[in-house]
Length: 400
Ligand SMILES: Cc1cc2nc3c(=O)[nH]c(=O)nc-3n(C[C@H](O)[C@H](O)[C@H](O)COP(=O)(O)OP(=O)(O)OC[C@H]3O[C@@H](n4cnc5c(N)ncnc54)[C@H](O)[C@@H]3O)c2cc1C
Image 1 (spheres, protein in one colour):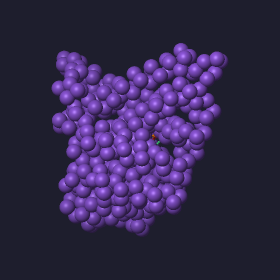
Image 2 (image 1 turned 180 degrees about the horizontal axis):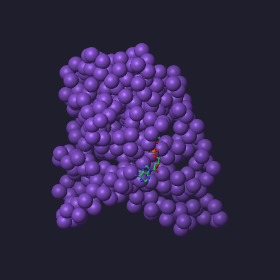
Image 3 (image 1 turned 135 degrees about the vertical axis):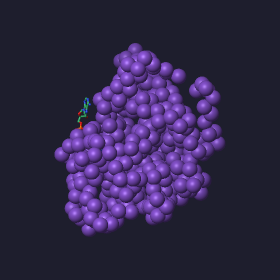
Image 4 (image 1 turned 60 degrees about the vertical axis):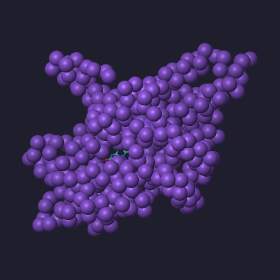
């Protein structure tokens, strides 16, 4: 099958695009304030999205969303991602989207009723608590947070950070070591922890590039001290933490990339428009070859990212885990995102750093993309190892 056969969901795409143009982008200055007025506006915009039948496009109707597969979601997210607020307005924000997917796939009926339904409905938020300050997040087999069985309960002790969105969330999914003697990838379990459980302490939002955030935009340090939750809060089976994390992070990584396409395309449009307007040294910036090179390089990077993303989404819809495709697009697009936005800032000169354009915010947010959900270096390692293994087995590599 070729890319041209991968038809976009035309009608919904037009609706999403129009909503982003008319309701989200013009309201960004208010949303960026991250105050109570912004919260009220988010609530209103979410109601409008629900009324249009576009809510929660990442999960299928049986999980409370309007999703129709990965490929369709890739196309929609390209537009939702144009604003950093789009995902929150459409009810498909990280990390809730990933948590909803694993609750949908691995949750018990009781867990789905108690956590998944209100999460997808947008009534509560959640966080995913895996990374720890003391050990490398790139190698989570080194995690130290422990959960010990005591009768019908788990008792959890540990220290996490970068638990995104923990401030104001109702529950977290905590990755804890439950059997330190098991093989490395069978040692950990994911456990649902309500935030109001005694012993859960949201220590502080950790400022990231000078931004502490508020509520959904925080990345929190969290301590768990003698946190007792029922064993029924185990997500999937005991020891299946890494398997579920892989199920969560694989699709989650490509969700990020889909949104980054929107960010790149927006930066590209701003760069081209400004280059055609601004004059220096007797001619427009668009006539300078350096600027033309930036535009050409950005075009090629964006289009390559689009095609890699659609290819991975198409394979996932076909039941493929697409591990190589996902890792390749994660590191390739994270760098492209940073490059394209940075060039757009440069073309705008000092204006690119002000709040007269969204580029400054976009650039700050983009930098983290090369680290979260696995740093570039780890994804390169995954791609190379898998490709080399295939060659070592005598299979070469099939690019189709
Ligand atoms: C904005 C943001 C949001 C995040 N949200 C969450 C969240 O919600 N939940 C959560 O649990 N975590 C979250 N994280 C944490 C993130 O997943 C980790 O930061 C990431 O996995 C890297 O772990 P680390 O920071 O401990 O770096 P380390 O693992 O200590 O790595 C440091 C550096 O070493 C290098 N490196 C590592 N391994 C290799 C290798 N094999 N080869 C070559 N170089 C290597 C890389 O350059 C890497 O950047 C978030 C991070 C950010 C920045």
